[in-house]
Image (cartoon, rainbow, N blue to C red; front, side):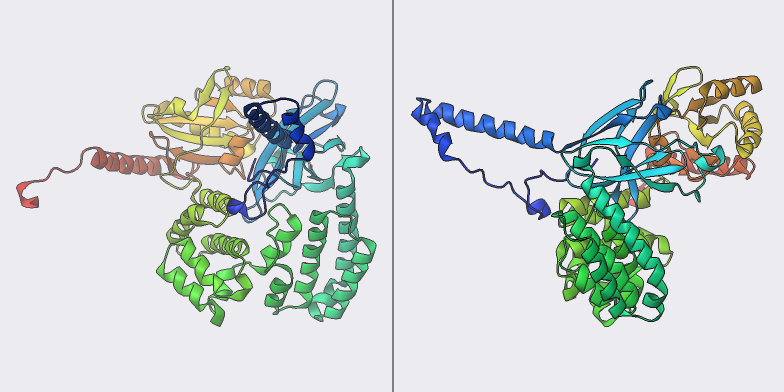
Length: 522
């Protein structure tokens, strides 16, 4: 959960400072009541500390409600830590008790778009600091086992109901605005895109503004503006610089505003590819060619007046670097080096945080990097972590005992576990819903390797970026990734494993026992 600044700090990121405290005339009564100067100073600082604690407390959000259909469920409330890689991050989790009651409190620094996966549905809502939300969960429809780890499965998005009127206003306005916006967008998309009808865009924006005037909420006002930006982008094709100038160049970066990122992602998709070939992009192209220094790239882009604002300029660069990494047209090692430098050279705390998240993403599960740790119970009730297997090659697989492909692979894994047990440890993390059924399945087939129960530990799935079952990872005795993804058992795994193990041992031997110098080396 990101906590980037105290709520009383200014919007200048790392350059922010606390607003000065003012002393009221009534507070001078301390002295008139015979309190010594030293005690007055002490009282002042105690009041300051209490007010600071109060600030953190009043910015806590509470969600609560009753949903008997979800009794016994563990639910996770999440948000996007950044909208470049769409990294999901948990804000908090809670268990619905046997009577259906639930409650969760946590801190957020500003208005935040949040969501919960509820079977086939993904319920979403916007949360404001300091408010309590009594929510209504939709009827539960379980997701099919075949879709739980289907990369192409999309949850159906649904608005989470809010009972209490004092917390409803922002969500109600955004949802009603989106309904009308989407209706007008779908009705007029052809004219906007094919006829480049800017006047029509003006009319649509005027209509939406008349229907949804300002409600005194800056987030909602910005939300509308960035939704309008998409309309203008469609009707002003090949005039993207005008759209950027009108909506983005001078605006505060909306880190938690999904409307900001929807159009931003379209405007700056594969930014380097187009910008490097333009006249204005020569300075940035030279900086990219000559340096792995993020600060140098930022300085080069600043020469374009469209990117004068530093935080906006740097978030454009982070998006460009991320896209370039996955495009296959740029040197990945170079991009990794630039992103690493951005974690220290970014102009604000938030830029450095996003840079760090992107750096982790592009280096995640790369060969030679530490494998994510886990702490799970096996079907015999014994706790296992990755460190439990240190000193061994680990063939880690994510599986489900009801999955046909997994069950087919288990037969070969059974053979490996018997014939290769001196060289290889097999560990299966099962995503089964019912641990009793899993235990019965494993014991009935007399499988002897460790089956760890996934249970409610969703983080291990995110940490290993599991999109499909089965998935295999090979981990070396030091706990580092050796192969990711590793070959499946039937994909000539044995030969590939022994080759990888031989290379590992050779490198380890060279590292631990460097070649001794002879007289000929001097």
